[in-house]
Length: 441
Image 1 (cartoon, rainbow, N blue to C red):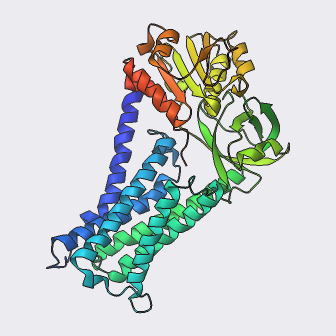
Image 2 (cartoon, rainbow, N blue to C red):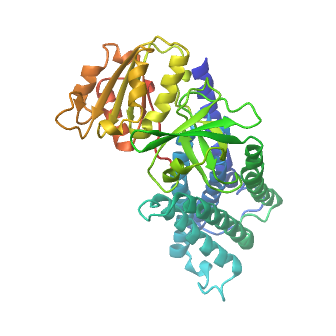
Image 3 (cartoon, one colour):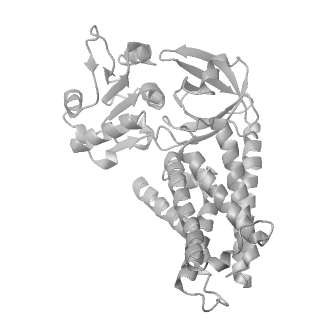
C-alpha cells in the first residue's frame, strides 16, 4: 500500500509540474490570436513562453516543500532542477535564435539607447540566464565559494526572471486578452509569494527553534562530529539517513546554510552531524565554540532503512564521509536491537581515514553485522581487502541471498557509479539499490 501511495504521489506532482509549464501554451489560442505570423514565429513564441514557465517553476523546486519532494527525495529534486534549468535556457535561447534567423527585423537595433526598453530587458535577461547556467555548472572549476555562489545565484535568477517578465509585458504579443494577462499576473504573484515564504516565513520558523552546540568531537579522517541540542523546544524528528541544512554562526535569514546528513540515531534527543574538512566552511567546524547557536531546516531525503521495515537484511557501501548517514542507520538499528543480517563495506584510502573505525568494531557486538574495510592505498602490512570495487569482491563478501537484500550506497559519484554497475551485473534488482546523491551543488 505504501509503494502504491508513493507512485500516486509521483504521478500527481509530475502532473502538477507539467500543468504549470504547459499552462501558458494552453491559453495562447484563447481569445484573439495574431494572424499571419508564420510557423517559425509562432514556434519561437511557444518556446519562449514554455521556457519562461519552466524558469518560474524552478523557484518552486528549490523551495523545499516536504510534501512535494517526499516521493522523489530532495537530492533528486535538486538534480531535476539543474537539468530542467538547462532545458529551459535552451528553449529561451531558441526563441531568440529563431527570430534572429527568420525575422531579424523584429529584434530591432541592439544599442540599448535606441532600442525599445522591453527588447533591452529581454536581451539582458537572456545573458543573465546564460550566466546563471554557466556559473552553476562550472562553479568548482571557476573556484567560486559555495556561499558566494548561492547569493549570486539567487540575485541573478530573480533579476533574470523579472526582466523576462517585463520583456513579455512590453512586447504584449499573445497576452493582450484578459485571460492571458491574468495567467501571467498569477505567475508573477506566485513567484512573489514563493520568495516571501522562502526568504521570510521559513527563516522566521527556524529562528523560533534554535539549537545549541554542545560538543565538537575530533574523529579520524580529518572529520569532526558537531553535536547539537534543542533550545526551548522538542527538537527535530527525523529518519535515520536523512539530512538537514545547517546554519551556523549566522542568522537563518542569511543565505549561509549547508546540507549535511545526520550521523546520530533518531532515537536520541541530541543531533549530530559528522563533517569532513573539504571546503572553506567545513574547515571551520573544529573551531565552533560550545554554546554557539545553530539553526536547522529539515529533515529531508528518502535514504533510510526505515522505509523498508520488511527487508530481510541490509548491505551498506560507503566511502569516506559517506559513512555519516549509514552510521545514523546503524546506530538506529542498534537502539532498536535489530537482529537482521547486515553487511557494511567501508571504503577509504588508508586505515587512518576510517572515520568511525572504533565504534564500528564495537557495533559488531550489538548487531548482526559483517564489517569489511576496503583500503585503496593500503601498505603491505594491511591484511584486509585492498584495491577497488569489483564483482569478485562482492561475490566474496555478500551472502547467497544477495538479491533479496536492500542496498544503501553513499560516497563520491565514481564509487557510487562503480558499485551500482557491479550490483546490476550480479542481477540485484534495481528497486533494491538505493543511493544518496553525494554532491547536490
